Length: 248
Image 1: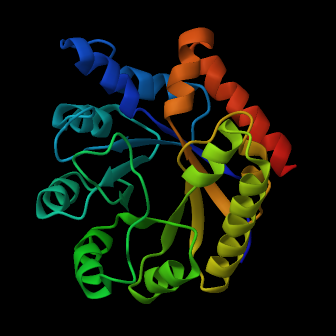
Image 2 (image 1 turned 90 degrees about the vertical axis):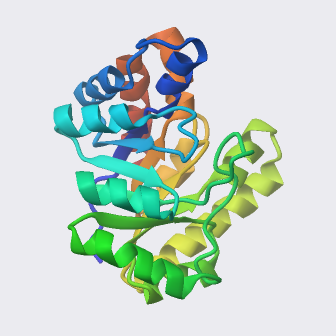
């Protein structure tokens, strides 16, 4: 497999979180997406949850109408979300586990335990031309299952690695990085494209960005938080700089 430029997908969910906290129309996630595009984001990620706690249907309409960068549509494996994705046909769909009570996505899909259901679920999406990815733990059993059902892309959940950085638990950080490294290498032997996301910051991004098998990082909450202090464009530009430096 030939490894290319490391792409940055910017998740805009939490612009919508701020908007929805008060109601009304501001701040506008679509405007944030367009600013991210101008700042060097290679794609935009938006998660339309079943309970619409942040991104709502009108946001997806606006993103599809105005974005030039690819949209990565995160969604649960439900009939409703499949219908919405098939109607819009975004560049990419990322299937994620979803629980109503969680604050954020807490883990990866159990692909190995639901192979037949997920295989049937993703087939129409792939047939419609969407790049299908599965959000999974850094676990070789899950990777092998993803390959068996025909998903071309996996996104590895980096939450435990990122949390270990924040908590200064360096032994856990190193073991989680080793897990991501080994899993990414294994996935490429199966012909899968590897992405990583969830919880990455300026401090923690470098070691993951340096992995040659990783083709895309999806980063959201940290960048939206940093934008309060720096502005969204400069926050993204700094992440892009750190990713490129690590890759070099």
